[in-house]
Image (cartoon, rainbow, N blue to C red):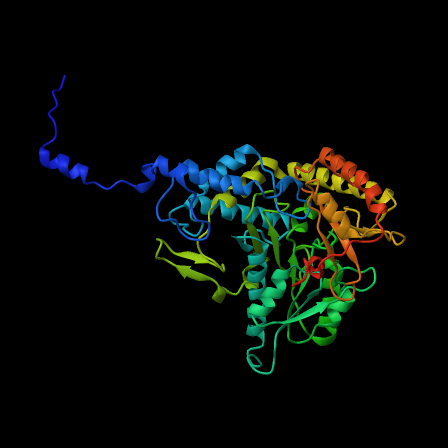
Length: 472
């Protein structure tokens, strides 16, 4: 056998001076027993990893249970295999496509799958990208709408012409942000009577030569209803014939674009309508992926002006990018591809149908109690909104929300937008993982609370701010 000699003394001294990654060592274990770190300033020194973990873990226990959160549209359950895959990809920077070409390839495949799902005229020529969520996707789509309008109106802009965007008052706040940040006039169609979203006639009536587009929402966050995309496009077709204004439509399908293709295949809302220029969806909602990933697609290259696309080469290779941010993890994109691969069309149809069945069943049961009036029934998005019946005077929706929260259920109560601010509702969002069994538990708790609510002398006082959760 080989006889080894010790290293020369000089080498041993060099090794003794070699720096060690601080994370390889443990902090003084005694210090972990002596004091707790400050909460609002960096501590003077480190603590052990298990101490740091326990501090954070214990504080997070005071959060609500995400599975019982009936306010959020965001996915709160995935298979363990998806969680493992995300952990394996969390250190990959999505923007660095030269270094992580397979992650970039998965993003490209997801775009192609969505283009096919949404009936792009030529899925191979449709363009799109992943985003951090639908808010970023909507802003990218809005930027494309404005730039296309600027190109068509270069002789009038920037001058007296001010671009405007037409949408319903029920849009998600990201659209108001877009108009504020990019200096676009917001033209909101208010709710009227029992119409809680955009209608075709009113939308067309607000358009003029400075309208960059109309936003149609496939699945309102207020009540889960679809806006009539085909009717809106038809009204704009007629407007173009009369006035010559070619106004594109963007479909905000944050939720519905991953529901309608599977459960409402005969509903025409997507790229089958020539006026639909772009669509967005949230992969982390009914795309069934943990937050945060969204998708923005344009029907063809003409719909996305080339001048909005930046190219960088300082990470290696030539990388086109269209985004508001830069670095973000590739884990969610990998999880989206996993879910597409795992479920396919039949799997998505089964999952979404089960979720809609839960929503429709719960809505029917709540409507049968007699204390509430349903606004929607969960038969579009698996979401429904309801308010107290006209003859109920002892409690309101805010009382119900507060009392259900005491039992762990997070149910939002809020007022509707202008022209229907008199209407306060509760809304229940059913997601994958919210089963019939959980729905039955919710209904049992609600039924047990109703006698106490009925015995109240009247609705309890509440801060005015509680009614404005959905207002910007």
